[in-house]
View 1 (cartoon, rainbow, N blue to C red):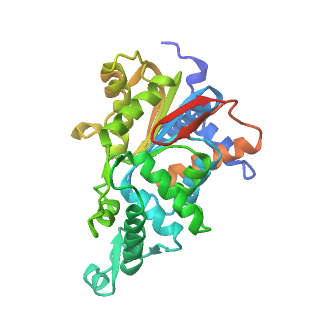
View 2: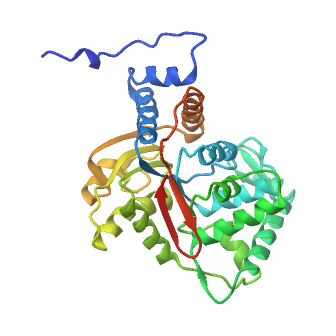
View 3: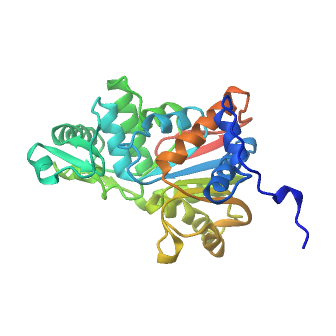
Length: 339
């Protein structure tokens, strides 16, 4: 059986002065997760070269792990166009934007002692309970300033929270960056986080129109000519983005599925959970296009994402830019056009 020359595995050659983007490109000539990392870099770049509406799903404790400024960079440089996040990441972003910090620790730390000392642990990272409570109160007081006689989409809520933060703090976070770039941020399960806790502590009378969130996501995918997805972990954000194509089709809009798809996950498909489900499975639902450029990278996102983002930053320094990006009008409704 003859094999094509381009399929030959190329041994990785060390070149001490090589930049990360070149390293990532070379890794696609290797095997296993090195190849997937290189492929993820190539597919993300391809999204940027075409008029693609790029969604990012953000799960896992990425902000406590030190990824806040990286995500700000992705937003500020329009490497993504819409963020769908867990409430926890957005709350931790607010926490850091208000000047609070996370601390390193050992995962073997005595948790009973931590509780006595007023600290809570996220694996090898700590937060101070008193600072968390201050963030709870900041969030609940912000919610009290909103009109109690109407429902808000989560996009509206976090857009306005980003505006509030931008007026009060100097440390830019995800919500401030998204507000300034005018890109939408959705949170499909706000109650499943400290955001929900903050709104409950004073019985803040604010209602979320979560079904309108679903309708807006269907609108975004139906209006965009091409869509791409980047999933950091899985969870609710991943499925919330995935189902947008299905929702649009059931509303009578012909969609093609996401043309580009990258996911960074440590989950496996054979447990049946959507955090590990393959893009091929998504094709059976019409969520992913039949001929999509897709890659699943099985890796800790705190390893892969800094490498990918740095490679993209170097490409930007060398002249990579998007010719047109979606420009949003946000209020009670959302619309956009590529400009």
